Length: 135
Image (cartoon, rainbow, N blue to C red; front, side, top):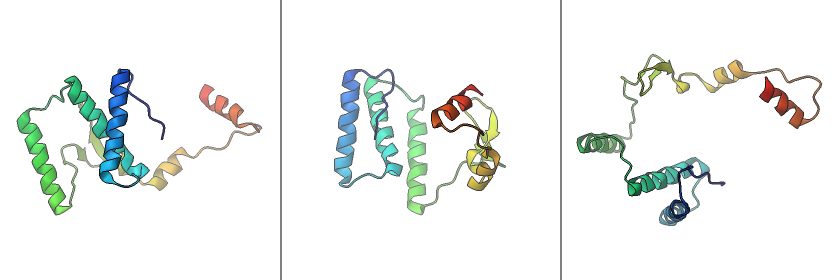
């Protein structure tokens, strides 16, 4: 897996990131699937941000409340999207805009929406990519 580091990472940050990933894999004790590798990536980046002193903007009470909600959800094995964020197929973003929720459509609907006829008369893949990039 090719790692793309955030642009503000120094060489020391990159070394810490790689070390955290390898330690995470060792703690798990088995090969991490591609679907779960993002969790190690996310936790390593969060750890580095904490080390740099970046704050999430949440108060201690809000963090404790989120931890309790997650703990309760883990015990019941039921995770629900808060209704104030997801309502009737819409998703409210942090800036207050409402957009269509990406999970509101099935994969078949997305496929039908995005089907395109192949470009005729192009034999070379690089030519078709250039045509797509230009249009």
